[in-house]
Image (cartoon, helix red, strand yellow):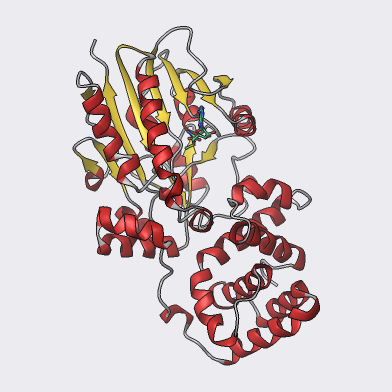
Length: 416
Ligand SMILES: C[S@@+](CC[C@H](N)C(=O)[O-])C[C@H]1O[C@@H](n2cnc3c(N)ncnc32)[C@H](O)[C@@H]1O
């Protein structure tokens, strides 16, 4: 029965429904909904829900002709999961349909059974159906920023199997070989398929951590030196903290979220790295002394991570963007005040929206004309990413390699 199993499928549908009906992000609900599952089952339920949501638009096209009305979300999600498993994952029909009918229980099980049997009889060409498009509100903004062609290329990347990227503490080349992965030009290790991460060699020993190749770039651009005092602002769950601590810097990691800071502490413990951990609001805390360097990974729309988190498309609208933009400016100004003369600030966001990237850098330049923009100089940077104020990384830039998250990175230096 492949990756199915009634309990795993039940939890996958619950996760999907928390997103589509409850407007929640999957990361917010997995802890509670999957608590009693084993790590392997948890990973499977999460993967099923993520992939079924990634393909939901295509599944809805398939289901449309057999549904007179849109069923309530739990039933629709049972059908979406089944269609994904049948046509994209290639699972055996018998187990998928039986479990879908069991999950529907009660009056709707007949409908689920009939719809899925009709779908199976139709001999449809799943791969010939259009690639799912990003949510309308986001598509409009992305087309305005990058053009229709680039957006179509991004959507093709979002629909492809997402690789798993790791940042390795030491000997990335050796770990790439050991894990049968690819050493990327920027130094991350890419595994073609994400499975149960905690079961991979090196996880328990803390030899590496999961971090998209794009997310690993800001800390490489900041390039903290051994002994430098560095602040990781908005640090949790700590991917960048670990990179900078691993580089030998004395790192203070600050984040407002106690739960996320707990994960940061666990990550540090697992990897044997250390940092001063501060749970506080950027706007209420002040450092005892200025820093040599600060990395500000500001809260943002996270639209650059859509291929890993298709749930974002359901839970987000553009309502919050204006508030985030204002917050980003305030965080930049606060961080600049904590830098030593000659100190450097990297500002980055995992957003595909210029409002949260290019436009924030330009606004910083006009508010602080004495700042010098430093051209990022880290190994393996793709020339396609370079823009006048730093780096713009887009998922379609590495389409042939399995894509990359969207990111904006800029570095400024305070006058000495
Ligand atoms: C993009 S995430 C950080 C990811 C992290 N840098 C990493 O690489 O693992 C943004 C973080 O900003 C934190 N945050 C949001 N508002 C904050 C505030 N006012 N003060 C401190 N942290 C805040 C959130 O809790 C969230 O963890």
